[in-house]
Length: 129
Image (tube, rainbow, N blue to C red):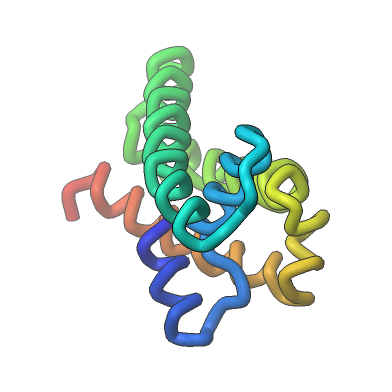
């Protein structure tokens, strides 16, 4: 998702990108000035760490509920919760405002597209299609 978001931002399709959002969060957390070098230097590892944590959480959910990892009935609510968490927690904490409104009026839709693509690729990877 981070690479797709970054690419969409570089092409001018998206106003936001997940790497810079994670980097701004990290610079705020460490009380550093959010310059592009710091934003990306901290954003990439921050994105990888949070991705790993969410992957571990998904594995825990699958194990706890004793369901197939590739079940769309598990993946769909998981991805919706990730999207909602982005809109109502990650974006505001990173300084982008609720729903990312400080970045642009349609960031919520950009995030929906990115999370939908993630969900489809995640489902494809887990089902081996």
